[in-house]
Length: 354
Image 1 (cartoon, rainbow, N blue to C red):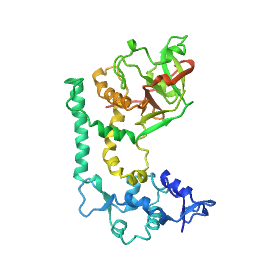
Image 2 (image 1 turned 120 degrees about the vertical axis):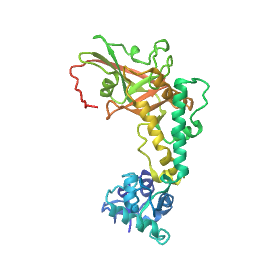
Image 3 (image 1 turned 90 degrees about the vertical axis):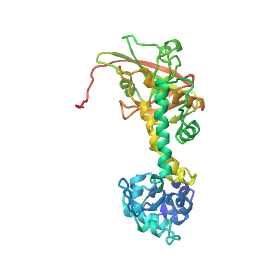
Image 4 (image 1 turned 135 degrees about the horizontal axis):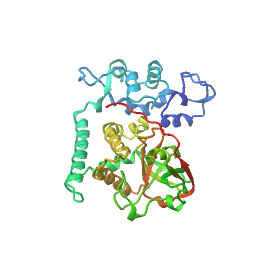
């Protein structure tokens, strides 16, 4: 039996199958005229990943072990296999491990769970990182600003951030909005603000200028908090050369097989909640009642990212879920190619009692 690229969501596995010169009909999903590979040839790629699971006899209250095919759907929904059917995953897994089924008999017959999520040492590492962040936030906001005792483990943080980098190609377009008068702003006035006019932001400290951009013009209206009948100038910005950024918006997009092969899957699963927390802190909308002290922890992290020679950081727009934002440190690599003036004609509010 042979499988094909359409059986898998993992790009790492898809690339391996794509190199095969055997073309025909897939025995698993039925796709025709496609590159094929005997699934047992993928065992070396899957072994470390499957070894992350262990049978659980007496699970704690918060642990729900289940059959391996179901746990993979729960833990890595559509990150590895294309099908969402447990039987399809079960069939493929057993085909991949057909020469070593005796060695993995317990994994394939008993209820299993990701061992690292139950390991007290692993949970302690995450707890320590969370505690160090909480202590760091308290100290840098209210006790010490420049000589900090409770600093975050920057060596660990650097490694975590390196897993979520993204290259943005030259020529890509982004947008910035400014509330203006009817005649709007010129292209020169749409860039990063002068240092002597730079206020504290979620990413930039007072007096240090970053260029805040959005993925689309619609998101910029949300981010500027434009009101009814406001005039808004939208600037279109073009990237002049390739840049590398830290992408905290898409921390949920990763390839478990690739991380497993590099022996980093356990670390990823342990520290992913912490990385997600950083992203949430960055993407919090600015409120009129905000205290600028609240920005200092994320400003510190942004400065650290900048010190690692990244050009910026990407994070979700909490005001427009379909868009995202960039805080660009190397804003000289963008040029404003044009501006358009808009008048806000309608605003729709969604609200709920609290």
